[in-house]
Structure formats: C-alpha cells, structure tokens
Image: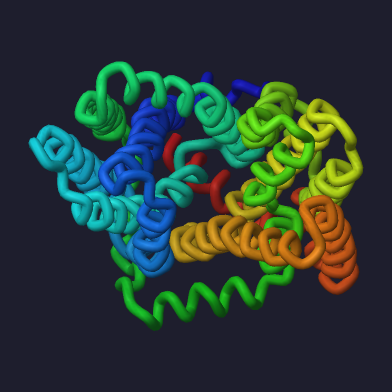
Length: 420
C-alpha cells in the first residue's frame, strides 16, 4: 500500500486518525441502537427497521445541503461543529440508557439527528481531501481511506457487540463519547485554508448550479451512473440469511456479510499499483464488471466457502472502483464545486445499496434466492457495458490528458509555488 499521503501530509494524518477513532465509536452506536431497540420493544422487527426509515430523509436532505454549505463556508469549522453535534447526540443516548426506563422515541429522534449531522459533515470532509493531499497522491489517499473503513468494518462490529453484552448500552455509548472527544482534538489541529471571499452563498440556486455542472461532465456522470447501476442490480445483502438457510448453515450468514469487507481489505492492502493507473474511467468500468460477475458467480456456487470467495472478490472489485471514482472526483472537480458534488456523491453511494436490497428482495420473492443473486449480477454487467458504450468521455478518461485534470493539476501547482 502506498503510504505517501501519511508520510507527507500532517493534516491527512490528523484526518486519518480522527476517522479511525470515530469509526470505531460509530460502530459501537450502530450495533447498540438496534440491539437496544430490540430489547425495549421485546423483539419487534418493525421497530428496529423503522430506525433506518427515520434516518433516510435527514440523510438525503442534509447530504445535499451539506454540499452547498461546504462550498460556501469554512469546511474545517463545519466539520468541527458537526462532530461536536454528533458527540452530543451520543451523550443523549448514554443518558437515556442510564434511565430506569429508557425511552424508545429518543432512539428514533437521535437516529434522525445523527444521520442529518453525519450527512452535513461528509461533503466537507470529502472536499477537504484535495486541500491536504498532493494532486499525485489522491489515488493513494483514497486507498488508505478505504483501508481504514474496511479494517473497521471487520474488527469494530465484533468488538462493539462484546462491549454491549459485557458492559451494557450506557457503557457502549460512553466509549463512543470518548472517541468523539479524541477525534475533536485531532480535528482541531487540522490546518485548512478558509473558503474564498467570493464563494457563493448556500442556496437552492447554488445546488442547481452544482447539479448543472455535474450533468455537463459526462466523465463525472459516468462515475455516478455506473456506481448506482452496480449497487441497484448486484447489491444483495438482504438475500444472505435466505442463502445461508438454503445451504443448511444458518450461522454462515455472518460470514457472508463480512466477505465483502475482507475482499476490500485485501484489495486495500495491495493497492499500491493503483497509483500507476491513469485510465481511471476504464478502471471503474472493469471493476464494476468484476463486481457484477463475482456476484453472478456466487449464485452457482454450491458451498459456503465458494460463495464467500466470490463475495470477497466482489468486495475487492468494489473497493477498486471506489478508489478510481474518488480519484476522478478529487483530481478534476474545481474547489468551488467540490462540496456540492460531494453531496451528490453521497446520495449516489448511499441510495444504491438501499435500492439494491429492495430489488434483491423482490426478485427473490419472484424467482428465489439464487435467481435474484445471479440475475442481478448479470444485469449489473450488462448495464455497466451499456453505459461504457454510451459515455465514451467517461470510458476514455485519462488523468494525463483530460482537460479538467490538467487544469486542476496546473492550478494546484501554481498555488503550491505561490506558497513557497
């Protein structure tokens, strides 16, 4: 793995450390809230599912608005304020858990608030990356960020579950509060230049301008459309419990859920080669095809471990696609649009899995688990190939010659020269 961004950028090290600590604490809450809801409602599936429903609308609205304010206001301050707000929400959960009779409505309200605050923060975090990492190291930075997430996705949920079981919900929330406080200290040390004085104010008009800019860039639209198609047609975690039951090994569903993260982690650790790739659009296409093909192959595997390997390959392909998409975004989008486009990106990679599970469930109901898994994977391959043909600017994108990448590289080199 290329560790250059960690060696060369103090601010990236601070952001990386903050994200690592916060991620562990966030997983504590992600595990604790549904478990506590299950306990308070005596095992109601509907009550647990409604927590995600409560989070959806704030996530969408605040994701778009978070992009607008990221381009209008000081991104560092937005990150600090939202991080403090997220800390407060967990304090409320901790106090609620300490009550003799914890209130169910608190879990719904706090879930909605935390989803909104997280979506407000994410565009500012994403758009800060090109400011703290050298232009030629953005691919490596994306791979390191993916490594951090995948490592946490494998280790943190298990540790979170143990903390909840051994010490209770209040203790789990308390640990999360501590991680937020430590993260805030790291974020406070980040040095990032404020927005320019002529930055457009956050408004509906600014959002429309961001959408118009994205639509006018076929290479950007390709990254969004391919990702959404890949997730809608091939994301199928809703099928894992049924797949495990059909194999007669119900305990294997946990293995299926972790397979993608394992594959992504391996791909992250061995991602040094990605820094030498320049045809990022083609890289996204090939990786997305690999994702769909691996999911389709899993549908015909007769054993648990055969399915696990296929799902791990799918996770590795998805990670590579994500690295190349992130590189295109960070190397070509002007700083004045980076926040608003990050809001659009947030919607593209959060809505896809939700719609994908709905598609998988419907097709599973109509034709069975294997049919849904296999047909979804093949549909993904077909959709990605079609979009690669319809969007040649995206397919042929080359970081060495693309006009937007060349312009941004020259701008950043000019700024670096002025600072020295």
